[in-house]
Image (cartoon, rainbow, N blue to C red; front, side, top):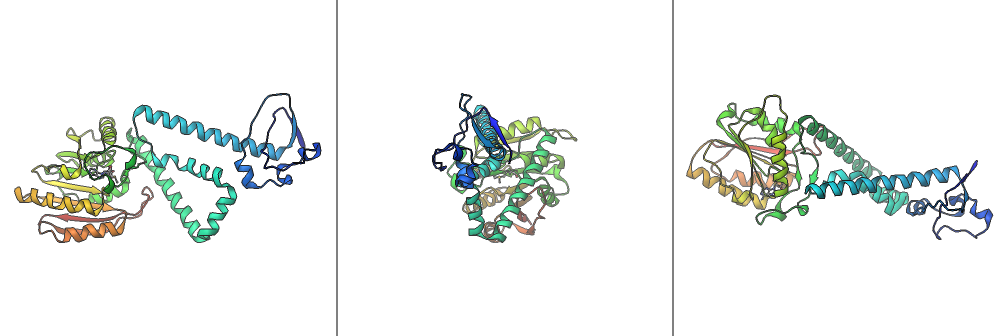
Length: 350
Ligand SMILES: C[S@@+](CC[C@H](N)C(=O)[O-])C[C@H]1O[C@@H](n2cnc3c(N)ncnc32)[C@H](O)[C@@H]1O
């Protein structure tokens, strides 16, 4: 293999065996017993001093590439964190998927990756990879939707990254927007005359559902969200939303825990996209029932979730309510812009 002379001095750590002879120093690190794992853990120090060493082309290129990838991800991450901290926007978990993969390789090396595949088996590893590819596709499609409508509704914010009101933080689900296609699928259950109804999204997150609901012509659109940072993002999105048919004037977000919200005495479409665990539903259902008892009116309740057991638990609770009859239930299609298929149920007052 051809050798090049370099003005850089690349130092490998002492774990890289060398007997100190000039001949050994000229050998490729792998020939000196360095493993892949070691290579990935090495830190390269570059000095423009007078010391010169000869290294093989392959070694130099590989090390430089790894170093560049590290620098790129470190800078990218730092920029992102700075920007987020500056804007007060909590970190987006999905944005760090690539970085976390690199960190894994940095920490465990290729051998660590092979070890994982061995532990979980080829088939499981394949499904894991496939799942992550689906995630990645849905993330890209979410970004595209955002760009088209001039908003920021993508990604995932975990609840431990935000302050919330009320006592239900541990029962809440992360802030993730509905996939546009799944929303359109669920919208088939909206009433024919939406202008006589108010649409309320309980756990409205960054407000994608509030924005999507605008094209159906509801009289009013309201979001209820307990995380303040996310309420601010949703309000900003409502201002910036680009929609061909214009804006609905009355669309706003209320910063409250869902159990503290008082439902308006109007015909309602209540929409719950995976907001919280069945423990909170136990409190919510009696509140809606009390409101119905006070002022009987038309209510359509649509609930969806990605965990079948939790959806079933809510279906069972709703089944005991004398105020609602079930209209439809099933699994929404696994659209390419959704990270998981959604289970749903639709109820209405008789
Ligand atoms: C899966 S996201 C749904 C986002 C939005 N509804 C959509 O369809 O795009 C669930 C949201 O419910 C909110 N949430 C969870 N528990 C809540 C509670 N007790 N009161 C109000 N909001 C809650 C979370 O902060 C999160 O934004």
